[in-house]
Length: 294
Image (tube, rainbow, N blue to C red; front, side, top):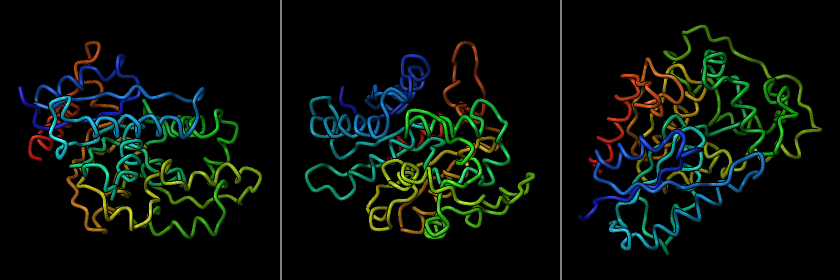
């Protein structure tokens, strides 16, 4: 049977948490779903996971017809850390003349920056499981450095020098978050004094392959259309909102779906170990609808 589209999904632990989601998307959208088993931190630090996903995506794009897939209809997709990797891969492949252009990118509550962990969603949802604010920082530091010794500096915002913070304020700032997302008890945070001893490693937080939200406009403008799913009760909500704005400001079509009663990881709980949330099913069905409409 001819498959109408190829899908590269980038989950963290496919066998444990994503097999049912991938099967559901494949079945309901009539797509080929390819899951990348990338190397994990802290044993394999940045950029290992990114390089694995990029290598696998390029291989699939070059051999799409072997899998019964139209090379012009390939989409990258990922959730959470996988959303970060999907966005980074999309940016790296943008404008490549030796490969087919990606049809789209699907980013499910992605983590896209590490400059400011005090954006409204990080403040409002800092204690909301399963992804607490400290856990988000812990994971990012382990990915970058193999340990989380500087969690306090990152939490305080003292890991980024004032001039760099000012440079990226045009893209990463509470000012770019719609006011309706700030009414739930948000209090603005003033970064602590910059601590230079961590900066030599922290400056990698400004590399787009690690933090795709910081890519230059020239790259953003070449990206394929995008579907972004965000959840209200999720520390990563504002990463998705800020990326949505960046894409739209640069003329990239965005389909955005927000789960007002959703939390981080909710789509992964579709029919998982007896758990299922109507909101997660709605999110999955919107993703399927988007894919079928490409």
